[in-house]
Amino acid sequence: MSKRPLLISPSILSADFSKLGDEVKAVDQAGADWIHIDVMDGHFVPNITFGAPVMASIRKSSPKLFDVHLMIAPADPYLHQFANAGADLITVHAEAGPHLDRSLQAIKALGKKAGVALNPSTPISAIEHVIDKLDLILVMTVNPGFGGQSFIAAMLNKIRQAKALVAGRNIDIEVDGGITPETAHSVVLAGANVLVAGSAIFKGTDYAANIKALRVGATSISA
Image (cartoon, rainbow, N blue to C red):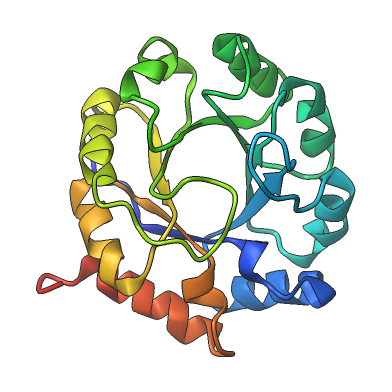
């Protein structure tokens, strides 16, 4: 199978919430491939962001794939809301419910792509038996709940394990947490092809330059 394309998915968790629609439009025009939507419930993770109505309000700001990361538990009762609000890909945490296979079936039944996120302490074996239902594996390289955290280098081996498990299937491997031009190369080398970045993209005002820096860092031979 040919190498999967490198995709940049800016996390709007780091955007200016007072002008969220404009921020989504700005990173779209700056070269984002996807738009990463972090949904937090203050229960599964120690922070609260927003729900489906807010996401629906920014859906018109970009035609790009909405990459929706549900850091909520339980997730199943809300899947239809996010699907109806414009999600293209819905990722749930392996730890967020008792029946992961059922959750993935529900996402697929809504006509959406399905992903599973793995917290730093969660092993790759958690998705071994649902691998053929996945469109994406999200390896968390920080503990979920806050932006701006430092990259956990031990997760590089988990990315390698995810790559081995995928074994040529049509599945993207995404990383989220502490992704900068400096860490991008290591995660891509380990096997990731979708980079989620918040602080590294929304810092300053030149989002295009920040996205370009991530791409250059990810593909630099000397990095």
